[in-house]
Image (cartoon, rainbow, N blue to C red; front, side, top):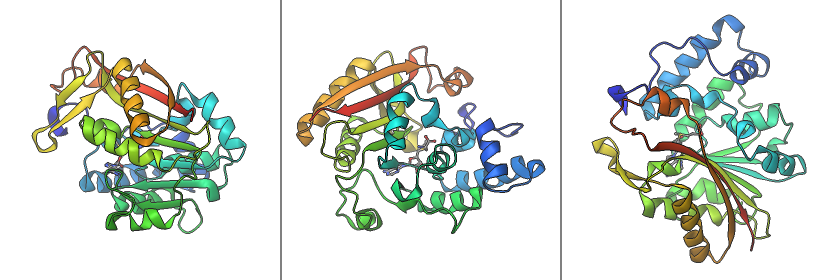
Length: 278
Ligand SMILES: C[S@@+](CC[C@H](N)C(=O)[O-])C[C@H]1O[C@@H](n2cnc3c(N)ncnc32)[C@H](O)[C@@H]1O
């Protein structure tokens, strides 16, 4: 969304506290060099694709721990659940789960459309080959059997994941692609009731298709009702049933961009947690 609003911080004075902690005490980046190190990696990644979460350095938030539904998710992971971060960017969530929650990397999986982000993640966290979480390139919109998902398929995690996170990803697409992505994600979820799919996405009080910058087309913004209906449709298409909790939450990114033509007074973030019933 480039210069249209505050989607890229030209000057970075501070980063999320947990990001600084991780970078100093896990990655071993000297305190005085943390900002320069982050900005250097951020700028390389922004050239790969200018996602606002990269431009705004919000990738250093430990999102899962701050989710409205964290108390539903983290105890499951502490009891041995498997975790998949779909659209993982640098793989920061896997590092946080390992560092703060002591989740074994053997149970942590992630994929991203841009494998370069995963490579830059190792540079950011200075943990190759120390970090043993499973991270590969993969396309959520394509069937698992398609050539671009060969690495993802090789992980053999179909029907094996207890908690799937899809954070700030679904809002990149219009309704039909969101549906395709969600159906593909359901295939990773363990068949038993209790499997979770959680995350956040940009939404609106008024559900519908909204324009994105011209090269990106349009995207669908849900409200709570349309999001619940969406998961009913996902359930029908996958022969599963989901209990959907979803809520509008405050967002600094929306506040900072209230003058952007892509934000209006109805724009909101939605956090959600869907639990498989059958
Ligand atoms: C806005 S970033 C969000 C990153 C991270 N989940 C977070 O919450 O900070 C969106 C991420 O989704 C990835 N992505 C976009 N399309 C994808 C697709 N078709 N399959 C997998 N990942 C995708 C992007 O490469 C990017 O890393």
